[in-house]
Length: 409
Image 1 (cartoon, one colour):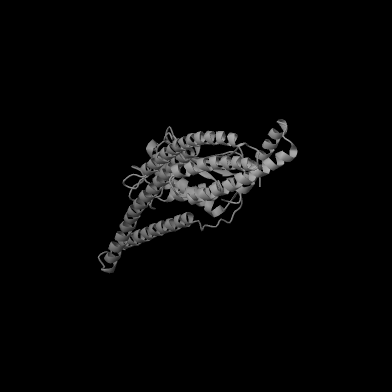
Image 2: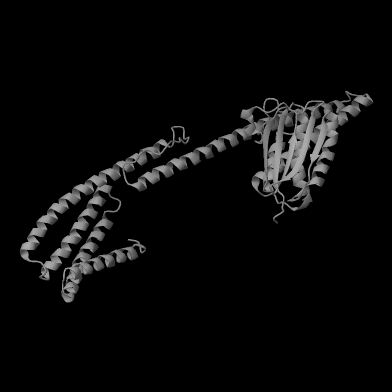
């Protein structure tokens, strides 16, 4: 019996003594006789209660039927002990004691029957909860969700079944995320292997051609050198992306936050993307409202914005437009990058920021990177307590960054 139960037992005993004292006073029992009667009954019942508690302790771990039966018998025993003690103190006559014993025998039989029925209900409820718990895991180890069954036992078992149902749903969601992450890892390995193999093969072939003097024309040699340099830069960018992603996922990235004017950050990003846009024949359009300053790491935030702009330019056809909008909305700096890619299939929208996701028309083979740009952008924005989302619009899709504007700091 735990210590915290003793105050409860003491309080119940005091309430019982008070009720008995009031009953004696109402029925005109003299105070001295009432005190003796209460003390005698308390001693007898207390001794029986100790015996009952010891029996209950001995029956721990036994079937619920046995434990409930012990509780019922202990209650009857405590009552009988109190009555016998009162009889020994000459408060109850022999005739009355005999009549009470008959009543107690009948009461004991009824109590035992009720205890057996209660034990059956609890046992049935426990089996129902156990069966439900066993069905939570399929033969393949996957979590199977379902609604909590109707439990015939006490409310605690019903609450337990409902909690198991909630746990199964959380476990299934966790397994789903784990499977999606594992699929993303496999997809990443496949794409990165391709993106590494292609430029490495090109570099090797051109280097061997130059080494064997297969190419002697000055213009061709210069072209080979440029191609080798471009492929090396492509590989460097891919390695940098992998390193950045590993920093984000490992949680070791440290942000040196400073107060940065959002207008300046957007202007710098647009200036950096202008050459890429010009080469691709894409027009950059800016629509900037009154912008606040934000608490960010300038380098990391600009990296996230650069990735979104690079993604938008690459997927917008020649002659199209990429629109950058920014404004302050409800205490947040909101920045939108809209392209004219034609839209993303609705089933793919939740996966756009997954590692290595490219979709059916996400990129061609000549594009750099391993499908990491959007995953890195999301990680960097979330590291600043912000969020990034994507949605379709009539001619393409729009990526939205929301950051606290720092006005409450």
